[in-house]
Amino acid sequence: MPEQPFDNSETNDSLTVEQAIVNLQGEDLGLRIYAAWWLGRFRVDEPLAVDVLIKALDDEADRTEAGGYPLRRNAARALGKLGDQRAVPALVRSLSCSDFYVREAAAQALDMLGATSSISVLIDLLQDQIPGTLPAPEPPNLAQPFDAILEALGALQATEAVPLIHPFLQHPVPRVQYAAARALYQLTPAPAANQYGDRLIEALSGPDLQLRRSALSDLGAIGYLAAAEPIAETLAENSLKLIALKGLLETQLKQSPDLELPEGAVRVMQLMDELL
Amino acid sequence: MSDLQALIAAVDAADSATKLSDAVQQLAESHLEGAIPTLIAALSYNNPGAAVAAVDGLIYLGEPSVPSLLDQLDQHNYTARAWAIRALAGIGDPRGLTTLLGAATADFALSVRRAAARGLGTLKWHQFPSEDLEIAQAECLDALLFVCEDDEWIVRYAAVTGLQSLATAIWYSQPDWRSPILAKFEQMVSLDPILAVRARVRWAQQQLQQEIGITIPAVATPSSEIFTDWHATLENLYHRKSQERPLPEGDPRRFRGLAATIGSPAND
Image (tube, rainbow over all chains, first blue to last red):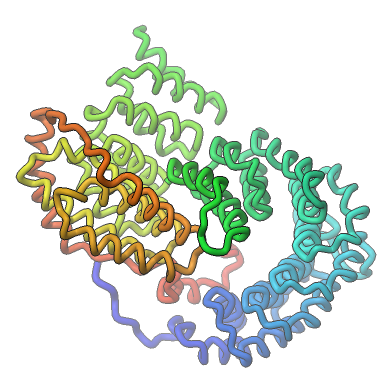
């Protein structure tokens, strides 16, 4: 079917950066939340866009019946993608928001921004020591977005958090256990780190597809080479296995700047070829 | 009840994901042609284990699977379509050519484009009628060079594998085509934004250096059935030219509709 020419109706406003920024400050809540998402999706890292997104982290107009802040969630997610460090202080404040999902999005964004200045507040949150933070509205009603916090602490190299992370290997929610293993892998020098990678490999053969997907994503994020074959054999979608293997491959390549292709990289590519 | 009926009955009776996956695997390993319709149906069950087993079974059965795979390509379920394309790619039958070309260049689902791009490099060229081989390979080359520009990294990655295989196949028969392929690799190895893709291109370059001049695949005789169907395939090839690629996945215009519906709570 040939492409339809674009009309200029309201739904088309999101097509320009200028309009998205205008919409984000407008009255229409639907357009505001869409604009926040859009600016992140298309990585509009213009200072003005960042300014209005930071302002949206304090929005009071957009509330769900349960008291959530959908616009703040989208704004935090977008700010993580835009890479502008000016967002860090406002995102750290968002870690104290009553809305569970705002805190989750803020922790993820701070992780993406490499914001080591957020570590102490993340640790407070991990210990559930920030007053006024409500648990997740859905079962298992986690008190805090532990997986996002743990992932951020691992990525931010928060070695001081290691003793606090350890107990989460026994957390009743498997996804949280995996996040703890992932963080500990990143915070522990090799070869002691491998035990945590191996825990994630074990999770690839679990009975629950959703959890296998989760373990795939964690292994891709840490790039644990020993997981290559187990990933290829996991009962899950090839798309997810390929993304995980890409993580392993790129971890191998980062150790060889001129595309020298270490043996491990070739091994991973052979597995990827078979999954295409 | 015959073995086949019993195996099919086990697939129908499976009441858990694991049982279904096991039953499909047993059916696939029977290597019975009568299993083909059930194996194709298993591609739509949203059960990766069952689908992997079914694809392996269909590839093993080869040529007899091809007409049903082409007829029953699921237009509504892109996951099933991706598995079917993987089966066609694995079989490499010339009758799959137009389907693979269309899927690689125009399917909206990246998993389908990915599987098809890989398949364009693994066609069994010796099964093509010799007078049509050049046009078929030329179409594949065009398509793969185009797919090397796909918006999704994994589709470009797959296109590189396809292009590498095609390069090996045409190296001596079509020396003029070497340079566009090598130039594309040169361009991608330095300019592709995704490190994993650049690495795959580098590996393709290295393997071409090592392989070329050593092996030329043996010529086998294709079956008469493939020759008969081939002309219909060739017709399709020319019709395909009118197909247009839909908007890529990252294109903002694809999200136009979303703005209209965003207010409804069911949308998150």
